[in-house]
Amino acid sequence: MERKGFIGGSDCVKILAGDWQELWEVKTGRKESDDLSNNIAVQLGSYTEQFNLDWFAKQYATQIIDTQIEVQSVINGVPAKGLIDGRCGSDNKIIEAKHTNSFSTMDDVVVRYMPQVQLYCYLAGTSGCYMSVIFGNSKWESVFVSTDQTYFDTMWSEVTTFWGFVTKDVRPPNRHDIPSIPTDSIPLDNMVKRDASTDNQFMDAAVSYCQGYENNRVFESAKKQLKELVK
View 1: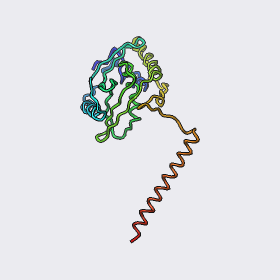
View 2 (view 1 turned 90 degrees about the horizontal axis):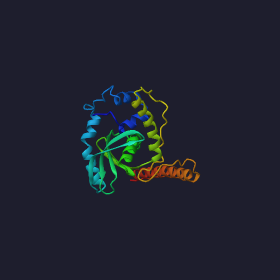
View 3 (view 1 turned 30 degrees about the horizontal axis):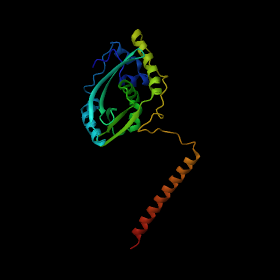
View 4 (view 1 turned 90 degrees about the vertical axis):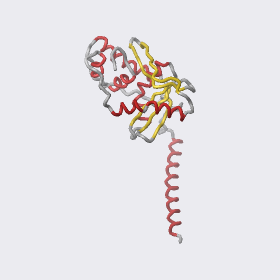
């Protein structure tokens, strides 16, 4: 696949990870992009994508109105392009289908692909994206990730800096000083994470809950033993 001349979603992931030199070589034509035809994880994700979208449609009782939607724009002088997996018929929001291993969690997937999701939302002009994820071969989950302008602006600042090295044909350093962009404030299914460790009322209730749960477990275990011992 031709990877020169633009920044894509997977490129944003690499840029925020600090992997600049290898990506720069690809973008300047010094190196071919990796051949993924024998990468089983990539190919499996490709082959299960339509099933993933069909399953999403079934679980949400909706239809997929478009697939493989190409979106592109020039953002602050940087040409950007994306290939969106699908669009949800009930609310016109975009869908990104992923297939990962059974040891990952939805939080892991969201954080890893947040740069790609935020770029696609920007290019598609939508307020968010459904992430439809198959874990291994026995679990599926979906979450709606809202767009976040602060995250996008911070990410695109790094992308613009990287693109400057491409246009000037100057080899960049690999970056080890890129701070991780917080994602806790980005709504997932219209809810955000918050740190309740400084909320005394919450922590008191949490301690009571844990103690009550443990006491109840001891009680149920003792009740079971007593029933077994009574002839």
